[in-house]
Amino acid sequence: MFRTTLLLSLVLILAACGSDEVEPMSYYGNTLENFEAVNQHDETFTSEDMDGKVWLANLIFTECVTVCPPMTQNMTELTQELAEENIEDVGIISFSVDPDTDTPEVLSEYMSWYNPADNIEWQLLTGYDFEYLRDYALNNFKSIVKLPQDGSNQVLHGTAIYLVDETGKLIKDYTGVDAGDNTFETEEIVEDVKTLTGNLD
Image 1 (cartoon, rainbow, N blue to C red):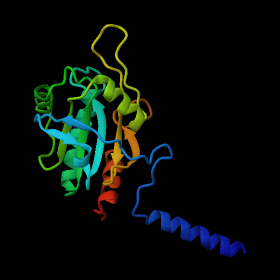
Image 2 (image 1 turned 60 degrees about the vertical axis):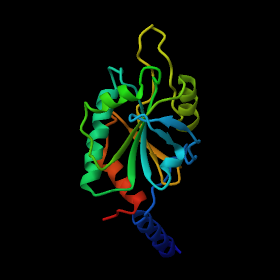
Image 3 (image 1 turned 120 degrees about the horizontal axis):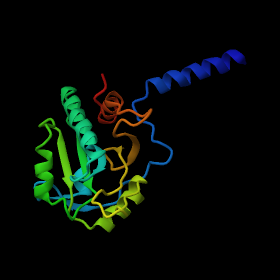
Image 4 (image 1 turned 135 degrees about the vertical axis):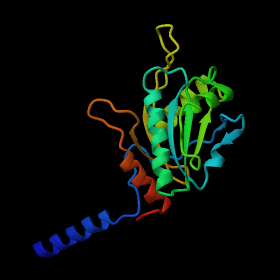
């Protein structure tokens, strides 16, 4: 009986190690709600445009002076890593939490400060009301977006990076910036994307 149990345990462990799936975090597994926005090129981008591709999503705004610059730099370096792995079916999507300020022109200029890989699609989104984005972030990403109470222009928002599969299902999140014991894990993200896109070694 003991040998049978041990053998079964080993089989399950080996099966898990060889899995071609990314295990969803327990509080995710939801499909993103439909949305319509405008990107940095002043083009309409909707949730339907996400179909068939794995996405890494986050929340930013261009006048952020704390977490957004390092997070955007991390995402930039991530696009370069993904490009080096020749992964094509993946894109980046960044929702502005300050849509009144972040017009397509402002977002385009913001992106010019960075050097993302040319062949990795990166959509910076605006064109909605703040209240809409606040509710969307809470309902879909479990993330609070809040206007400042001190009269500044620094919108409070989460810094996670979210993994969304090709069907629009939210799978898991990662640390977007180094903070305390949490570090930005490029290798983990790349491996998960490779798994979801079928680009396994």
